[in-house]
Length: 553
Image (tube, rainbow, N blue to C red; front, side, top):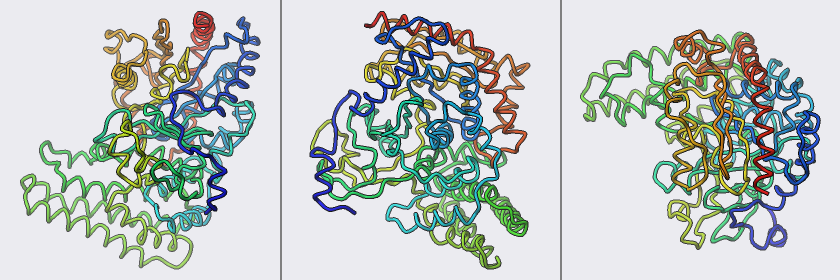
């Protein structure tokens, strides 16, 4: 906590209202352009200091598939001399996991080998993860995002990164400027589009389309009526990773995780969803916890719990036969949820004393209640009681908001990079998403139309290739539109037909436990090959981006 004098020194006006870049980002981008200029020269592309193109790589979400895929894409770009052409790197969901990991190294873009090798490393000891979690559990706004953050950091990215994003504000321009994205949960469900997209950079955090920002170090501090009342510690990268990659926070995602035998049309009402939410969250916790544990006895105990959960789920199959919305059905599902949680408590009491039991005890005391209330990404709201009619009521009236996975809205960070603010010439868009191919693009196009931002034309005939796409598409922008190089991970070059694309997506599904070494290697090599195979296309588009920038100036 800081004194009022210290708070006053931070800023006379802690909330910045603007649709333009803050001075810190402007300064970084100015320095980064020199790196880009030298990179273009080494590639034989003529360019002057005032025509350096604004090129960004927008990595899609997609759980560990996108986290590993982005590593592979960046690795190959470094090897091909293309990485330093990037002014920006934008991520959502799973791709932010690898972004937060690689930016731990201030020189990462000169040595992707180191970042890639960490993926196959030994991981994090349970005690280290537990110590972090115990500290977070004491906080007022502890939520499921904290659990998700520590388990993805320790189990998937193999590191506990306790630095703060604002620490990067003073770095030199060795790496592309990073933009992380989330959405505000309540506005996403009920509010205007302007209140949905939330971006976080080393310098600022705020609502992209409303144009309200605070310094990143103040995200989570206490505000009222535009005034900073109390400065709180900034969230570290572990917690931020949990916030940004929390697709399971939204109820629609749970629908997609229903076991096939439960997926009966007309049988999924609120009571059933509440029950499935509890079951699915427990199942994911078990899978991710497994990745932080080496003790054979503890692993055996987890096997027992997984079996208990599975048996309970099947035992409650009869409840699905009750008429939807009936009182009997409601009461059966409520009882079933309570039984699930009680079975976890009973199981935890049987464990022998040690770090694993301490961890499990923390889960049962602190985490299970959050599963019941389904609380994610709880953060103090800097727009609380802010006096401006532009701010939606859903943001003005609440002392806190809930930041969750931006991939639920658009599974790539297009909102932060369309329009005049960052004035992008070329978007390189490796596509690691599950679901319908091209959906990220069409959602971005629809968002751009609604918000009156420029977006290149998409030929509707191309959308017919969604089940078996090519490995690279170019959507050329005119005038103020950015061009987009769109690169599906699984495609005609590496899959013999649509069935193989579908099989690969299932094998490397978004919601599964940490990848095996073989799976890691396969996704890495696939992403590398996609970049390598399309180097000439990328070079051609980079050259056009220079011309695009010259025509603007």
